[in-house]
Every structure is written in structure tokens, then in C-alpha cells.
Image (cartoon, rainbow, N blue to C red; front, side, top):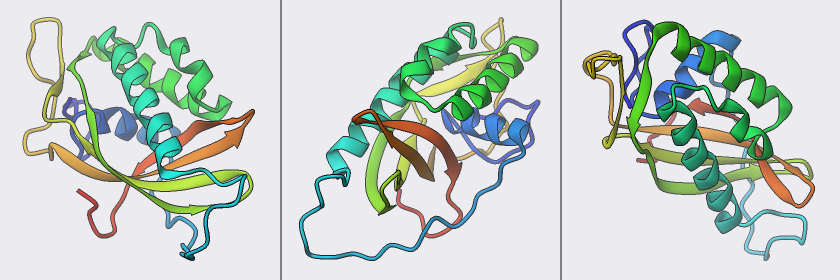
Length: 179
């Protein structure tokens, strides 16, 4: 899915959803906490790369479905996101409805690496490939700004809670690409 022309951002595919959410919520990319790698095994309360990847893939899969339906089923994200993220998703869904656009196709995570974590949150870099998706109008015309990248680096912020990881935001990463 590429960026709808009604939003002046330089992202593509599912990245469009994040871009619209950021634009509507006023968020900007920030530096995540500094990573302090160690050779010690993770502590019992530390998330593994596999757990983070699983949470991100679940979020992307359900998010794809929500926006393929034009945003009408946004509450399906409730078990996967924090309350703040759900409100951002609702604003994106409203923007999709107002513009009368929907997503076609799906997005894929091609890389994930843990950046940092503490007792309550995890920050991870990921590469999102949107080459097999688009945002289109009712006539099937792409609503994406020409020249937006098909693959983009993000930093995802997840909160730890009730034994699972909840999406709390995903922002384009302006540092070195992880794609």
C-alpha cells in the first residue's frame, strides 16, 4: 500500500497507515533508548526477538485486514494494541473513510532486530515491505504518492502487559536502514 495523495508523506504500503496515524496524532520520529548489548541470556521478563516478531506479524496481519475493509473494522486491533494506539488507529480509519480509500494486498516484515527494552517496553527496528499492497479508491486507482518507497525502516514501540506485547506505535526510522 502506498501513500494516498491526500497525505504529503514519503512512505509506502502499510507504512502509509503509520504515516497517516502520525500525521493525525502529531507524532514525529524520535531516537529510541540506547541499546546496551550483552552476551548474557535474556532475563525472564525480557522479550525475545521471536516474541517481538510474532507480536509485530500479528499486528500487521490484522491491520492489513482492517484497512482492506477501509478501516471499518478497526476495533479488531483492540487485543493487539494499547489504548493510545487504538485511538490513533481510529483516526487513520476515519481518514480512510473520509477519503473513500482502502488497502489491497498485504505487507510483510522482512527484518526485525531488538533495539532496547526495559521492564515495561520493547523497542525494535523492522523493515516493512509493502511492494505487494496499495491504497486505492473505489475505482481501483492508486491513491499513493508517486515515488514512495516499497520498503521502509521503522522503529516499533511495544508495551509489555498481561504476558503479551502490545503495539504502542510505529514510526519511520530515519537512521541507518534495516531493509
